[in-house]
Amino acid sequence: MTSTTLHAGLVGYGFAGQTFHAPVLSAVNGLELGAIMTSQADKAHADWPGAAIVPDLAALLAQPGIDLIVVAAPNDAHFPVAKAALEAGKHVVVDKPFTLDAAQAGELAALAVRQGRLLSVYQNRRFDADFLTLRDVLASGRIGRPVYFESHFDRFRPQVRERWREQAVPGAGLWVDLGAHLVDQAVQLFGRPDTLQLDTAALRDGAQVEDHFHALLRYDSGPHAPLRVVLHASTLAAHAAPRYILHGTNGSYVKHGTDPQEDALRAGGKPGSEGWGVDPLPGELKVAAVDDWVQSSTWPNRAGNYVDYYVAVRDAILGSGPNPVPPEQAVALMELLDLGARSAREGRALPT
Image (cartoon, rainbow, N blue to C red; front, side, top):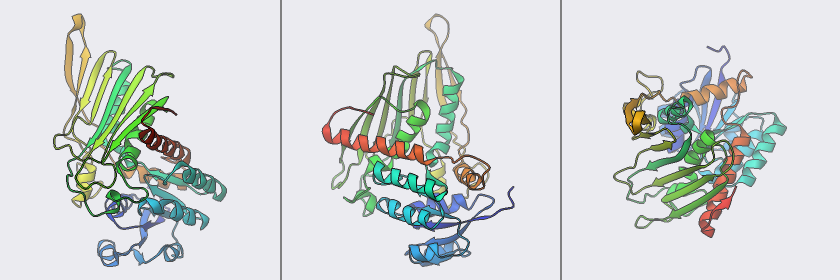
């Protein structure tokens, strides 16, 4: 428990603000949603009657007692909003992707240092049940040395919707949307790859931006070499591939299904409620036994909890813990996302 209450101002009350930020940060003891900047004033007030509802960033930054600004606006607004908030002396959390490119990311990181303020990126998928469980599998050593890893985020959304994420505007497309999660997870597990090769496509009828990507990360040096990592996402996968496929020198681990927190939040679930973040579908582990016989077993899942991200943000602001996603990690990720986009344009693998 903490006796200090920090007050957050939320920029944007679209899908990300409503679903992934407002209910999650409000579940943290010592962190309160104090104000929301949105054009959907009636909805925001109905959902959060105790928060001030304001029409623009200037009004939000002028609200008394706001310690933290959470940027959940469209991707092309991340940089200017975060910059203005830092210049106003606020701590800042930015939804992923951090910015439109690594140059903007580096500028914000340097500004946060000069201002002496926390700057962090909401990489909530580090707190997925399946990812936390995968880390346990790797740490156990049961599969031996990892040699091949696939990470899929497949969905079936055949209709192109009228929303900025699917229109030809800066910051749109699946690579910076889901790629920001999958690349981050791969780097958390194995570090920076030696090369990255990305293929993207717009496969749906009427698609304006890429709705499919397939990335190959090669690790030919360092502690995990040789290792190959495949990252894949599609919006036309009615029959989704396994979420994870991990092969090692002593066995394999396969996990189907995705973390349940997004669906629970979409349905109005409250973080911290009974059974929160529990994934009922265990992964399957197969490891070598005697005489080339393979022993198969299930691997129980850890519970996921996006609230842990904001708990860590609270503690970092109060000086009692590390930033859960520090700016240097966010800048490095933007460099890889930029490199992937260049790889797709040039049709070749590029050194990182």
